[in-house]
Image (spheres, rainbow, N blue to C red):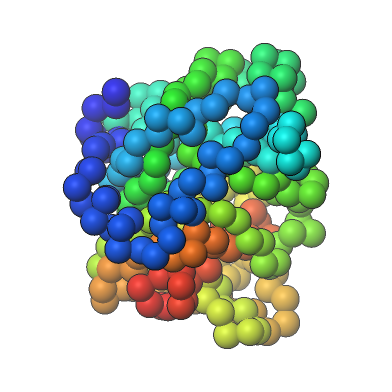
Length: 271
């Protein structure tokens, strides 16, 4: 049980059920996240609808366990996220360095019989809130993280951290709703196909010293391909991202900041 607080996880069952039942195919999309069978813990079972508030600039890490479905023979990943844990209620930092530095992917893979384990660099949310089904909390070398979904693993896990994946369309199953409040400053990429992507998190791993206050001038730091544009928008109404079919897409820039697709079937409007 996680107490409410800054960056904390809190129950909002009624509001979330209203939100999810208003989305066609949401229930079936949620069901697909539990469809894998392997030696990994089945932390999807018993997952509950919860909501994180006050996430903006909260620090987190993601830990992905990769396994092969013994029935379908497909490689997939179970995603765990530290948000709301490890003292984040007080500090807003759910991946404090004194804990995160001890995370050992090889030891985790051995413990859970995973094919491999991928640990993200420290990231900082730019969204204001997030709602999804949250499963069991696991301890990874001293760092707690909660199950937040299953999905097909990338053809190469290195693609998650490779500059070669920058500015590419990457489909992903998603049941989460993500929100930016009215008045929030958001950071957008416009691609040559007329699609708009909104930043959901940033990292200072590649761009050392990058902070949320410096994102407004990120366009001077990143290298955009022909036809791409970076812009900053102050929202005059709340932006909510909910993939109606259970399928979303993301991209990243060449500094490994992550952006989600907006537009029809993905959000209430495109900024």
